[in-house]
Length: 143
Length: 142
Image 1 (cartoon, rainbow over the protein chains, first blue to last red):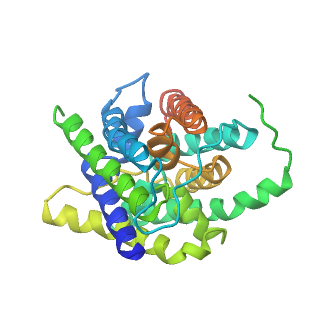
Image 2: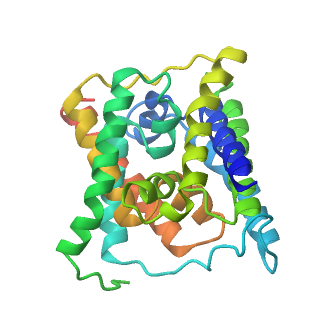
């Protein structure tokens, strides 16, 4: 059953990304281009996605997932070095290509060789990340 | 286009429904970088089947949807291979260090008022704005 629900979720996610225009890199870069021809679409996408999810988190309190043992633990509030450096690196790559992990995968079937090249580099980066973490082990909370 | 925000809002609601469904059925945070990353670094191999099937849906549904509903499917991505590889590397390393991306920290984090999600989203949006400013308006590369 978990496999079935995972497939439904992935499919809905992909359809939402396509429909909202987030698989189009020019719209994502347009959102980040606040000093140029700014495109506000991404704010509507984020807003539209956060509302149902806010309700889902509320509903999950004191309950159990339908096909799992428990809901994720409450979020940590640890704003540490890895979060800051990682988010900054991610934002730079996001701005450069206009792609983040979800839309990059969602557009694989029509993203031609550019999409495939980005995803391959991203997977390699994900493989490198744990090694980078062990190379620089100090990760104390900064805030 | 004027209808862009309506499409954005509707698509956003569908993304939110996907994340809600994943949470309430499987009890997991729907974060693209986490679902992929857990397969790459073996940390999520115990739930490998769920992850692979999720990604299969993510790849095939947009293709089918664009054909059935006749929505133009194009990414308008740059053809500059160096930019694509550099960007991919930064997104891969960055999302794993930060433990989340636009879906995990953005959609799922902000909606539960996670401090890490909110901070991460602020950081990556600022970094993206600066990057577009420098590479588009100063250097004309993208």
